[in-house]
Image 1 (cartoon, one colour):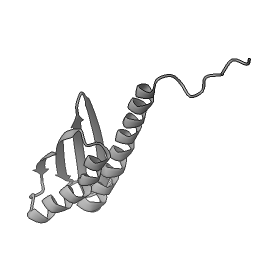
Image 2 (image 1 turned 90 degrees about the vertical axis):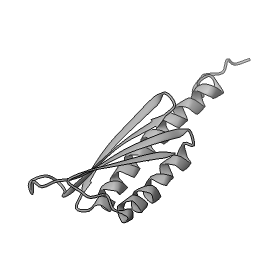
Image 3 (image 1 turned 45 degrees about the horizontal axis):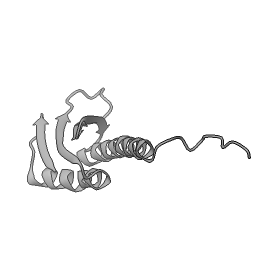
Length: 113
């Protein structure tokens, strides 16, 4: 998995990089075909915005692209939101692929003999 970090208004330190890698590793375990994660960490200067940090993640898996955004008082809180959103999207997509591969609908009515 390739991880690209970009900071706007925030300096990307080794601690932020390690925390991001650790939290987003969960997404790679859910779908091993994920090849690239683009993470953008934005420091909000406007006090009226919802949080002081915003995190946007773009996740590429084969032909499909997943995107999620989270905001919070700290980078870790925003990352937690993003991981929840991405995990939900990826598991839903994987479920749809699994159902398609198994063929047919499980809700079919069997004819009586």
